[in-house]
Image 1 (tube, rainbow, N blue to C red):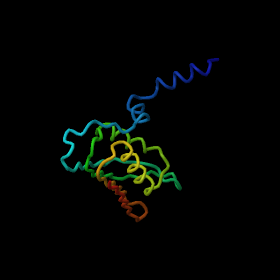
Image 2: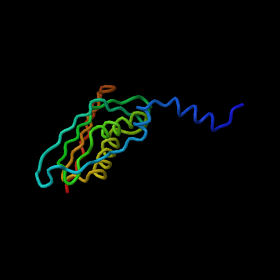
Image 3: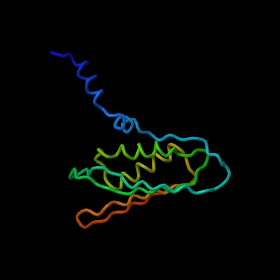
Length: 135
């Protein structure tokens, strides 16, 4: 009979590197190379998924992040992994857009940001949630 530490280490060996990166996914920033210049960064993330907190059915969306950086810029691969971390979360359309906005603000404190979550229609309902923040 194996002990529990062997079982845990065997399970960890089966976790793929991409799954591990998604689990650890957090927003990473780097210094804005043009502080003082106002410019827009527009990002489209077309493969967002989460689960309906009521039915458990998957929800699919395209996430649009439009922001004006201040002192920090979000690193794109980290943003991709962070967005992928929602795939197994039970979260509403409204809360997912608001959570992304809150985490984005915490990470890079932009001058202005809009997060738009455009969900694929399900059951003849098309939902688009837009949230924004301005300093």
